[in-house]
Amino acid sequence: MRDEIFKYVKQKYGVEPDYPFPNAPTFPVLRHADNRKWFALIMDVPRNRLGLEGEARADVINVKLSDPLLVGLLTQQPGYFPGYHISRGSWISVLLDKTVPLEEIYPLIDESFAVTAAKPKKTKRK
Image 1 (cartoon, rainbow, N blue to C red):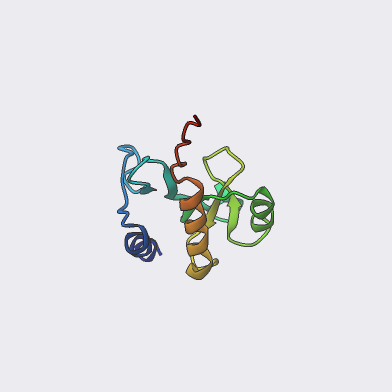
Image 2: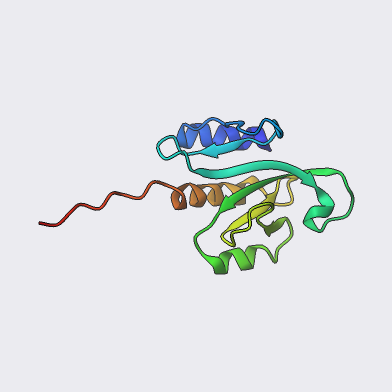
C-alpha cells in the first residue's frame, strides 16, 4: 500500500517521500515543500505495540486530523489506532494491511495535508 500512497501524494501534491532517519531508513516522511512540516509518516511497528496479536511488523501511516471527535470515533474502529509514537491526540495511526481501504485513507491524508499547511500570513492593518 506504500507505493499506492506515494503515487497518490506525488500526483496530488507533488510530494516525494523523504527518509530523514538514519536509524530507521524504512520510515518515509511526507512533508510540505514550503514549511517542511510532516503531513504523514509511514512506519513498520510490531503488531503487539498496536494491541494486535503477534510480534510481526505491520505498516502504519500516521496522519494528523483537526477534529478530536473524529479521532475518537476512528480509533474505535478496526485498523485505526491512537498515533503510534506521536503523543499528540490529533494524530492517528492507520494500519496498511487493507483492513482500512485506500479509499478511506486518501481523505485522511488530504485532511492531514490541509491541517499541517502553512498558515497565511496576517497583513498589518493601518
